[in-house]
Structure formats: C-alpha cells, structure tokens
Image (tube, rainbow, N blue to C red):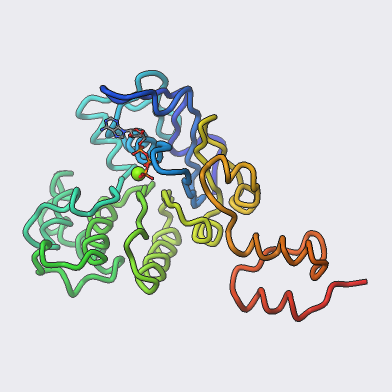
Length: 282
Ligand SMILES: Nc1ncnc2c1ncn2[C@@H]1O[C@H](COP(=O)(O)OP(=O)(O)OP(=O)(O)O)[C@@H](O)[C@H]1O
Ligand SMILES: [Mg+2]
C-alpha cells in the first residue's frame, strides 16, 4: 500500500515555542499510507507539538512539511488543501467542540469546505455512523459525557474524509469498553483507506494496534515496526515508558526456561496461558 513517497512528512524540522526551549530539533518524520502509527513518549516530549506540525497548526522554524512529496504552503489556500488531507483531533474534546449540537459541530468542517447543505449532511450522517453516535445528533454538545464528546470530536475530523487522521491520546479518559469501541471504529476507518496516527502512553495498546511505533526521546524520534520498537527496554526507558506486559511476561518466562528463545510475546491472557501450559521443546 505504501509507495516510495510518504503521504505526509516533516524533513529537517526544528521547532521552538515563542517562550520556550527547542522542542524538536532537525527531525525527520514520515507517515506512510496505510500504516497505523503510534507515537509514544513521556509527558512534554513533544508528541502534541509534532502532531500540530504534521497538521499545519504550527509552522516549523526550519525544515519543511510535505504531502505526497509536495511542500505545503502556509497561506490560506495551502492550509485548506492540507486540511482536506490531514485532520488532527486534539486531546481535550472541549478544545475542539464549540457548536450547540453534535450534528452542527460535525457539519462545520464540511460546510467550511464549501460543500452544499445536502453534501454536508451526507458527510455528517456518515461520520456519526462511523463513530456510532447517530443517536446523539441533536444533543447539545455541553451535555454529553466525556467519551461522547471525544467521539463527537473525532466525527468532526472524519467528516472531512481525511487521508490521514491524527489523534492525540484518543483513548485517554475512556473506559475499557469505550477504548475497545474506539479501536473497532479505527479499524473500520482503516479498512476504508484512512491512515491513522495516534499519540498514546499506553504501550500495550500501541503494540496491539500499531504497525509502526515512533518513540520520542531527547535524542530525537526513533521509528520502526511496533513489535521491535516496543521490545527494546533501553529505548523504552529513554522514552519514559515501560515494556508492554506481554513482552515483559515472555521475557520472564524465557529467563525461567519456561519458553524457548524467540517465542512470540502473548497479547492476551489466553495466549499467555497457552505458552505456560505448553512446555518448551527439547
Ligand atoms: N504553547 C506553548 N508555549 C510554550 N511551550 C509549550 C507550549 N506547548 C507546549 N510547550 C512545551 O513544549 C514541550 C512539548 O510539549 P508537548 O505538549 O508537545 O508534549 P507532549 O509529548 O504532547 O506531552 P503530554 O504527554 O503531556 O501531552 C513541553 O516542554 C511543553 O512545556
Ligand atoms: Mg500531548
């Protein structure tokens, strides 16, 4: 699915806020079409900043942002084009929702694209259905629960039919069922061709969900297959993270000679039980 040019990329990007230290320095970062990407790092490591750079909300001090290889212009036309491709959902839904009702809020983006009322309504219906909140369409946004507000904020981005959907800690604050439902929703969006990028502190979720993982450390971003990136104790420590539980469990079982070297890490309690109940060869 991924070609030789990334869908969205930052090249040689440095960024500092007006009144702050340099957050990112000479960073190369690519989003490949069809690859689910998890972005991990400790508090203050620059995940949100990186996501805002990818979606054009912040402009790099140095370096550039490209979409399918073409540099993004930061004028109105350039940013409008970018928003048709890349949509960011911020961490706190209250920073994103502002309209009186759910349907109004979700329709804002499509109407702003200049779509007709009918076209916008179709986009809204589609996005509400994708997020499983059709029944909330007429509800006032300020009366929704936190999880419902999060879904509404994501629906607003989905209604733009972006090629890349960037979610800043989308599962934070959701209950276990809400997290599962969100992952199912994201699977559906991915099956329809949307590339999803997610910032999270949850290494277990990242291992389960992502194709690739990017770890932000003081030395820069390290990106690779999630399975490999999330098994490196030292790298995880530098990124302020712990080992996923399945990786930690498999390591302990190996140390105690209960499973062979190279046994894949369990992802569920059932897989863990299978490993323990099946004695090592030889
Ligand atoms: N508007 C701002 N003005 C000045 N400094 C900022 C601003 N926003 C963030 N920073 C600083 O930039 C650095 C990176 O912050 P950022 O929000 O990108 O981190 P993060 O990885 O998303 O953290 P968290 O896990 O807490 O969400 C931090 O040192 C933060 O204090
Ligand atoms: Mg953040």
